[in-house]
Image (cartoon, rainbow, N blue to C red; front, side, top):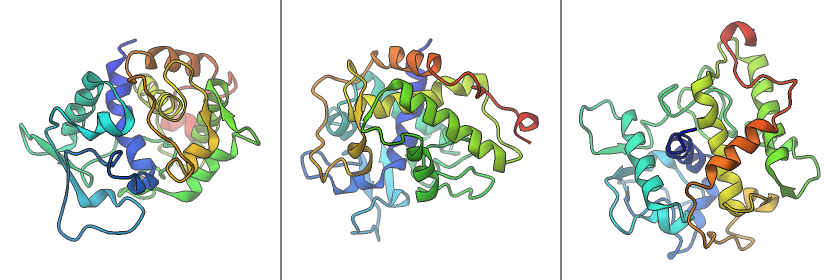
Amino acid sequence: MHISLPILLGAVPFIRAFPHFASLDQDNAFPPKALKSAPGNSSGSRLKPNHFTCKAPGPNDRLMDALNIGEPRAINIFENALTTNPIPNATFFDMQMLPAHNVIEHDGSLSRRDAIFDPTNPFDEGTFNNFMSYFGDEQAIKTSIIANARARQALDMSRINPTFSITQDQVPVIVGENAMLLAIFGHPENPVANRSFLELPVEIGWVPVDTPIDAQLAQIIRDIIDQSPPSVPLTFTPQDAA
């Protein structure tokens, strides 16, 4: 499995999914240092993704500082996100470009409705709550728990979206987002996340792990795929979902 693919694609939609990162303090500010606030940006406590533009990352990129993502992976995230910019040879992207369907955005999100329902792709509390509901009463979220929740979430969304599609190539990307959750809110070498961190990571004391998040994600991704419920397919075509 080519590890850079799920990492570089996974982080950007993950970042968009968690607006509470906006309340990080000065030292752990998110979005990255490369994110430049545009005129009229919100001063509210919830991140407004459309108010930011991301330019080429420098050596002190806050994506690394805020989440401790390894530098090669942080660069890959940025470079792949550039593909959402329709301008040839672009060196920047903004958050309004990211919802382009099946570029980075995809069906079966953890926290956003499918594009068929809302092409602007904002954070959707109901969608996220449905995903979290599959954790049951568990507070320590490990690979088997998130594997089940991700699969059940996708199945639920397939039942209401007649065009729902997840291709084989998208599987490591989509599962990579889940692996990122466990690595960031748990540890890349011990992927068990505190459930509360998924909801209010800053307010209850979350800090970045001290180990850079990098190649460890490959094993987490494999474990999530292997532990997915056999009764739920990994891939969907519109015909399967109808």
